[in-house]
Image (cartoon, rainbow, N blue to C red):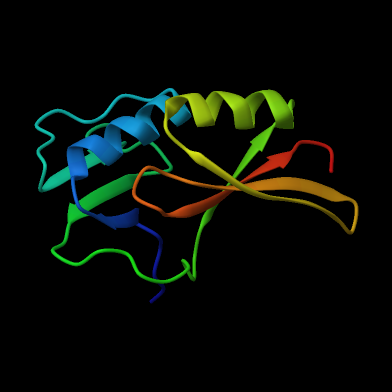
Length: 118
């Protein structure tokens, strides 16, 4: 017997708002019946990656131990687009032949945008 990944889950303050942000990032719809307590992307259609957003009472206080890496053909333009959606830009990296920018979503969850071809 083995396991498989069902979804990547984000703990957050407002599930509906954070799902809307990620919906715009990925150009994928939020599943029907999203609420401030729970929302998802891809569960209704079984489309990967499936993302779930669950409201929790505590604030985020430390760096993520797991994060998403997004691949793009135009690193600077995509980072700018994501900032326009509400992301905050962090550090830029150019290491080992790879280029990426770390950003945070509106609730402070870190993620990276990686230049395709790095």
